[in-house]
Amino acid sequence: RVTHWLVSLIWCRSVYSLNASDRCDFVRSNPDCRSDSGYLDYLEGILCHFSPSLLPLVVTLYVLWLLYLFLVLGVTAAKFALVAFSDPRTASLAIGALFGAGVLVTTVVAGGIAILHPFVAASRPFLRDVAFYMTAVFLTFTALYLGRVTLAWALACLGLYVFYVLTVVLCTWIYRWQCRRSLVHSMPGTPELLSDSEEDPMSSNTSSYDYGDEYRPLFSYQESTVQILAQALNPLDYRRWRNQSVSWRVFKVLKLPVEFLLLLTVPVVDPDKDDRNWKRPLNCLHLVISPLVVVLTLQSGAYGVYEIGGLLPVWAVVVISGTGLASVTFFATSNREPPRLHWLFAFLGFLTSALWINAAATEVVNILRSLGVVFQLSNTVLGLTLLAWGNSIGDAFSDFTLARQGYPRMAFSACFGGIIFNMLVGVGLGCLLQMVRGSPEVKLEPDGLLDWVLASALGLSLAFSLVAVPLQCFQLSKAYGFCLLLFYVAFLVVALLTEFGVIHLGIM
Image (cartoon, rainbow, N blue to C red; front, side, top):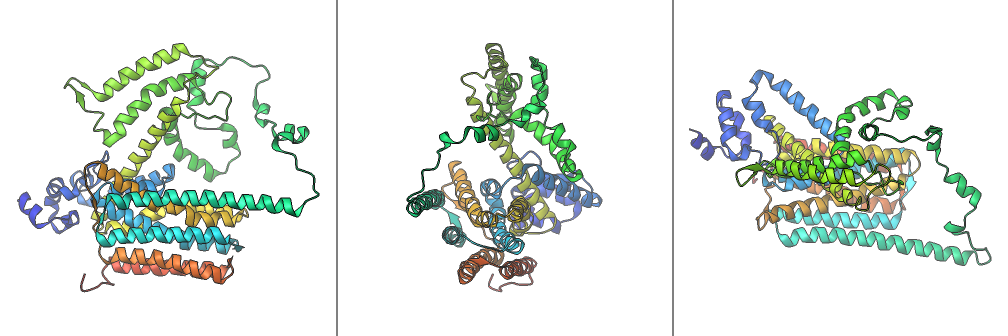
């Protein structure tokens, strides 16, 4: 009977066409319903471990968990694209997120900045960023049209981003050189300004005053190892806590568990501090915990539970080796001075944090895919709504704050320049990682008309700004901002009508 299901019902979303008693077996047997990565099988949890009457409660818990991941991690769209593109079944989720976030940022966020603080945009950076972004959109549209991503295409995306970065650096250097040159020619009789090393000693002493000295004890004392460990693992600054609002405190309480977990597992090397953030007991603990986190998060712990010679699992070998290395480090170093090889902790911290982010992004992708099956929604519409909104909310608040503080140019540039990274690196590197696993090319399966609506909307929003901004002599007004907001509302209406079949093409 299950074999008959697998032949007649391929897509996982077909599960709700069956009787409630048959859905669990279908989910467990259908390859399209399985989660090849991640720690929890959310779809199996809904259909196998809870009764249908508890579905609203389970979905609510899933949504709260999803919001918590967005809240405490603040992961960018590129990282979700890396995870989603590594699985052909969720590639449309990444496409929806990238295009949906692109439309959102270039219309709602950019328009909101123009409404909050009308300003004159920098002409050359704006034209450069829009041109590169339109090229990236065209590359992605080409891959969608062909239905596949080849190695040459993935390398072209990464190469285009490298070229974009080099162009930005070169343009910045030329601009600064022209400014210095014009300054010298405009003031021939002006004496040379003091260099950084020749500045007024009085002002230098004033600016370098360390206000933290006010909180230091009058008589210095030697902190014990236990005190150093307790202070290093404390994510809460009590002085700052007393001066913050209630909303900030609630937000901080929600983040405390994750911040404590990151302090415990991710070593941080700070070159701006005298001791480079050397915490002897905590860093020795990192030598045990961080490698353990690496093997338990890599491929969702598949490598960590592998038994070497059928005797000892990899995680046990890592713990034993890390304990030995931590013991040697503890007795060979002191609390006051960092060791010569302290810089190696930076690489360990980078690897651990990257794997934490990857693990969280994998869970987000799996939750969204499960919610899509439950509500009979395509991955693309989930990407352009929930995932795009969740990814862009942090950028939106940051850009609006910059605009209110009098830096609308910087905020507006971030709308176009920052999202280029998401599309080129997210798609290019995500597909490249899948090819490394043995796939000669990545197959893309567009969700019908909706993908073309997405690509067209992003292209039209960029083309509108490319024409409208120069016509205004780069003076961005509130009218321009309201036009962008109306464009996003129209796009969202068309996308949802397309998803629910109101707008359709008979040939498709």
